[in-house]
Length: 192
Image 1 (cartoon, rainbow, N blue to C red):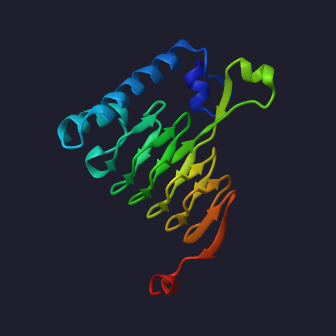
Image 2: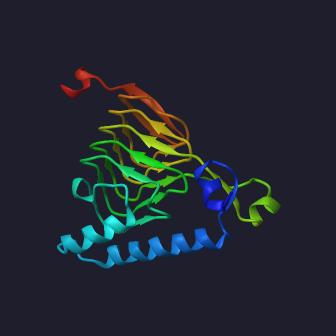
Image 3: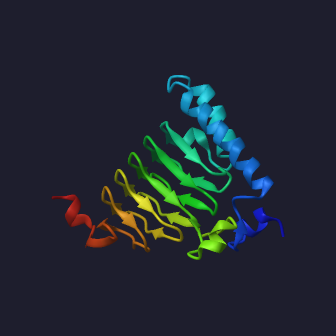
């Protein structure tokens, strides 16, 4: 198996020294840099760059503000109506899937990579990646960090500055470090 195949299969792979993965990251990061230097009013140019960065996303159906950064781009899925505020980073070594109408606040990071705790193994450039899955109609406040393997259920709200280390169910308000469920969100909370 190639290192990319291992990465996509959720196995330990050489993230730091594999020439193919290094080239893929450099290519997409250069595209992200171009996007981030392109004025927001140049919609057509930004759209074309986003199509190259995120080949599996209907870029006409989402809004992404700069600066924006990914590691590969091809592992990102964004549903229609999703909004990514300034300074969003998607470390998409594994799939990062955001449902429809997901609102992501500024300065958020979605991290799929896990490095070995052992310093010798870590120095070899090894890592494993776990997917992140966000349901529909989720609101993620500013400065939120989402760690590898996390799933957040549809309709939930993640409060600002949260560190999401484990799954969050649907239709809840959750926040903190580590992020924890504070209360259920239902019709009665919407009427308050």
